[in-house]
Length: 401
Image 1 (cartoon, rainbow, N blue to C red):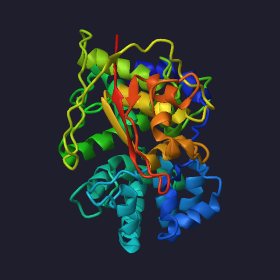
Image 2 (cartoon, rainbow, N blue to C red):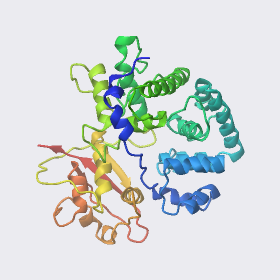
Image 3 (cartoon, rainbow, N blue to C red):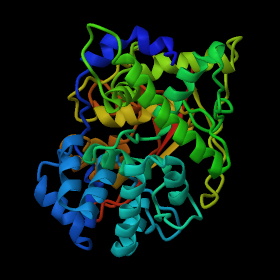
Image 4 (cartoon, helix red, strand yellow):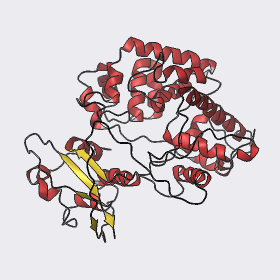
């Protein structure tokens, strides 16, 4: 079997790449502890909110349901953004409200299929509208269940996570094998999401593609392990390397996410034409006219890692990369973003003197303002109740001239 050039060129990087470190899980899961004992058990087990791959594997060995819920928290399943006007049906809550015995039956089915290597039927069974669909859990998350089962059991072919960054990686690697008879089953660059390829619409074709993805990574890993004089690696190690690092943390070209994306762009946009990213409208949110101001944005430097408002800056950096001209965040959402590593609360004057705190002048004296100004946004004047600390802040993108 032929190997993609990218894997051959980066064989040593794969071998020597450090173990992936997942950030502490977000404090947004705190509110689920009271009503859902399984979440409380996970908190009791990991009071520092530090949950890594090996920890999730151990939980799967002890209790399948607890391991599954932990894998969803490890992966960052949405626990804040509502899917309804009532604001109660987050993906995480939908999952937790689904009867445990039905979820456990789905997990047991997954166990049987993984042992036999039937990844097509497995993926299809968990797809929307199928028998084992779990509310709130899309393919990027139910394949996390498959991945951890593969680590627990001695499956001859290891299932892998099929998320945005790994579909990108698989697309790029198959592009490199076109001259050897490979076919690219991805249909182009997704115009609705930054750094994302389009998958087939049909769930049957998605299931076929997942089976191919798993088979390819396993086979490519076996071929790499045949190269003499090199340390052995696992499919999980290859997957971990291809997943890359968050663009908020590493925007250097050496990040696999950007290296692989260049291969995709060169294939689907060979003449360097720009792919316009169009955000999909939220049907539950009224359409607003976006006003983009023209201002000079000179001399505003990025906040450094360790700054209290660093993660708000990085969140807005990603929004800018996604071409979001208007970003609306609640106070709770902002505090959750700031609490990436340790719990953070906004200072009192962010509520008692909100217009000054959320203003756009005096950023040299008030460091929080650099978090949005450095990324090309202006914050709206805010009226916040100091009693219940409720409000939303609107960040509007500027044109830099």
